[in-house]
Length: 225
Image (cartoon, rainbow, N blue to C red; front, side, top):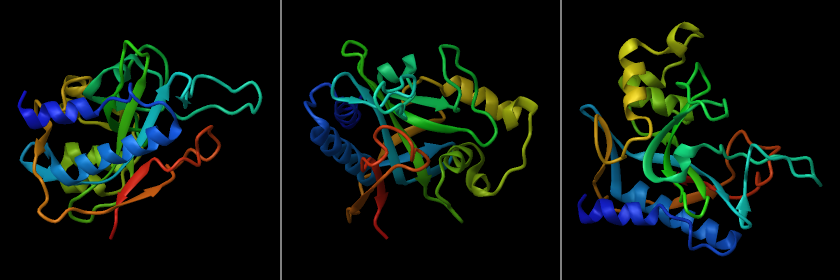
């Protein structure tokens, strides 16, 4: 691991935060680093990250836990609580299903995160790749994952399919191979590629979690147009 990779891996850590404000600010620092200094390589294509979202469970500080219902409000959180999210710097391919047994992402219910957790501190963390660059690119975590696997045609609409979760045999094999593997190695990986002119980021609420515990937190980061 080189110094740039080690620096990013060190940043993917929320064990030092003491309150929600520090959660927000550290998320912003990570987003700026990834979106300005790194590219995602998938086979022979490179893509910039145009939008991402943070999903975190930090005990006593930011308990955005989708598996627990608040006894007072009756509201759950939005973050998955999977063992893959207890380590930093890995890919986490996911669907909306929960539980200990992992299954490949299913049709129209999929995405990929960069993990940013800490097993010792019981911190679960995932940074959802929400929007990637490319011809005719569109926002959406499913589109982002499909573009990684299929190239720019991954941004196109898809038809419902129950066969192999909607993936080809090759795509399914790659998902299984890269799940919970380092973000710096393999056919899908992040490489150091700093922008000469740094982009500014907008802070917005996350999409599709309106009725969850921290729905109003500005944990989606988008490149300003």
